[in-house]
Length: 252
Image (cartoon, rainbow, N blue to C red; front, side, top):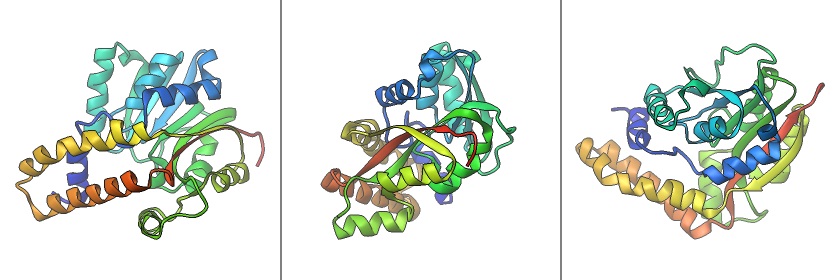
């Protein structure tokens, strides 16, 4: 397996492919006002196996187009949606977030939890804006510095892994510069990282290594993930995902 295939293999059976939580998705829904609307059209971009998709489909009178480029993740979502009785509300779409086949103004809301980093925050919010109707909602969680000063090893790691990591103030500036009016923001708490993401991932390491014959590539991936977890355990007060909710303005 190549690096991407190994990453998918590690995360395919996971409920979440990144930090997040059902209650946090519900909080973002409340801040957005979407829970009071009807016949809502939502695109959940980079949905993975669909933890957020399932909450959106259960909490909002909506059809959710669930977008991911990994077919295996969408297969997991289809199974989960059948079990939850939500299959008629969810439309899986296997495509890249950089090549979305949507029409201008097609959606009332665009959702993306922990995935917009794949194309960069600024590029993502600007590229996706045209798919929203005027007044439509953008809701994304994005890696965010919680302080202006950080330990050097934490700063070095995340600047190397994701150069667009920045403070909430700067992310809000980007939204305003890109044709949005911010209407809500909150920080994902520690349990979204540890209980919902990192600890379950650690529990999959042994089986993952066994499946892949303890190959050098598989061992290296586990070591990389362990190093990231260790950094978070030491420095969780400095970094998290910020959840940003904004409304598309009529003009830039």
